[in-house]
Length: 405
Image 1 (cartoon, rainbow, N blue to C red):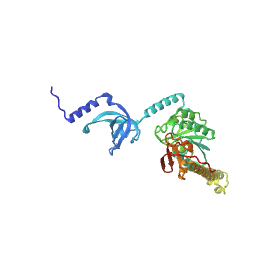
Image 2: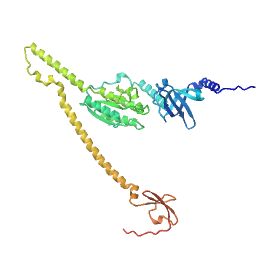
Image 3: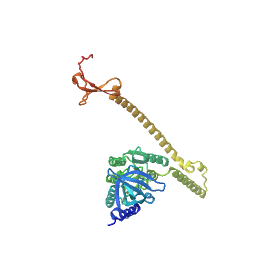
Image 4: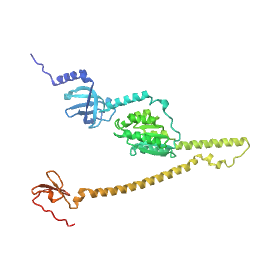
């Protein structure tokens, strides 16, 4: 029987058709670590997926790459969807990736949807239970990380728009295993602080970073809060369970600050307009009765009503300066305490002792310290540690000396 002789191209084309006709390989999910990642100027992504046993070549064409919910990078653990094909010029099979997400995201998404459905059925998201925010809040509590970018944005915008409000920072972890309990406790503290509205949130991040705001305990703490809660988690495209249960959802922390307080510039303009209307009304009334209001132009209530806010703004500025001075003094005292503790730790550091000419002697066989002659036997091997290394030694004899002290 004659055996057909194939050209390389013919065989490769046959294998390509064979693989692409396999239903099992037309919709495959592959878990692995991204390796050899390259982003071509055309917009295509070229990379490999690897584990401890094998390497799989992958390509994600521009149309699919632009729709990915992540920015792929070297070393990231992902799950990729696609179909197996053959790149004929190199005779190499590869995965044509149509979708990709961080490994574990699918499980988190399922947990999100399950909790969302359950809490929605209980009525935690019902629009009729959401409370309006106070128009002119006197005290605002911020439940967020004291070191993140979100707190800086919130404080800057609140102080610029409405410096009359008192702002309380209720610090909490917003990421990691302890974040859920921290957010719950901070929400309760904020509700007891006398605040009239609470802003709870953080800056952007991955789904895993934001996950604490998808926990049931946080959702129920927001629902149980006697004070209206504004949720401000991540970017505008990030939707969390906290957003759904809060009285108001802000797309970003900066937007939350703008939603919670009025703009003092708009208030000043509104007051000026009211002053002009009041002046015009009084003048009209006076003319109708044959009266003159000669000193009306000198009354600041009608000429510059916004000036009535000035004493309050000055008080706010003075209080802020005093708070900054107090905080600076506390930080200086804390720094002095840290310096003393650091000096104490350095004094206790064995390396500091060795640098002054002392040595640490240990038995080589078990590492026990040799602090007395009687603990070392003739012929026994020792290790002598000095400031820059160790010296091997052997006991040739020894005699205890009477203490001179």
